Image (cartoon, rainbow over all chains, first blue to last red; front, side, top):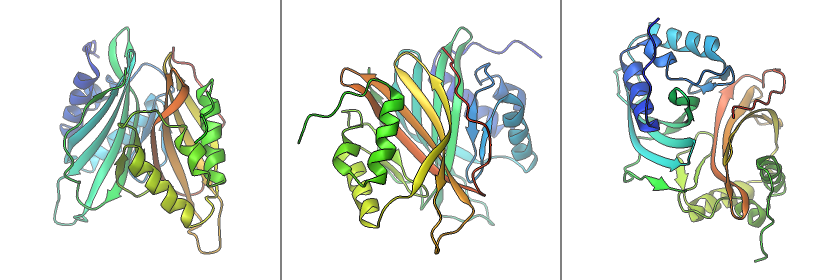
Length: 142
Length: 142
């Protein structure tokens, strides 16, 4: 085990999350979560998972099934002092056997901890149709 | 238009949200959201909606189809100074024509505003099976 990087913004943590997912890098991925057993993860069409061990096992099972081909687009952000809520549309790269017309909607919540910005909640779900072509939007609430 | 109540906690706002939904009370419901055009709402199996007008229209369409029979259970909370993230399992009351074995997973994000605690994001999605019988959990992260 090496010491995890300190991520100095939620955006950096989020970029590292999607990078780790695309490379099936479970160690880097799990080091991005808050050191708290109350972290929550919801994969599309699945039940709620709580805690490091359960969430780790779920990503291990996903990675065993092959490379995850998703690309985050159309970020929508609410920034607060210690918390950021990101609403993301994930484009799913199509493979031959996949249903073509879906996209994934994802809510990621980040908190500022003494060890940098960490993920505290990831909620992903399937929406029908191709990803809509909204403009990229970032808002500052506070 | 009457002045909206000031809700002094996210829990109070959440209780008012589910109460307004159960009574199809669109005015009370919409007064619970932050006064910001960047509010986000995701209904189960639907696309992302942003802004008051769009979200209002979506709930009006839902209410026109009849009473919404959901009951929030198994709250899982991350409390911060100005923000709270609630992960909720919603039990769906069965009707004859409904698929029996689903439950709804919901992420609600609340922010503290000068006009009390308001909803800034509601993300609901369908999960397979009946609602699991976890214990009720509330955590304090900060």
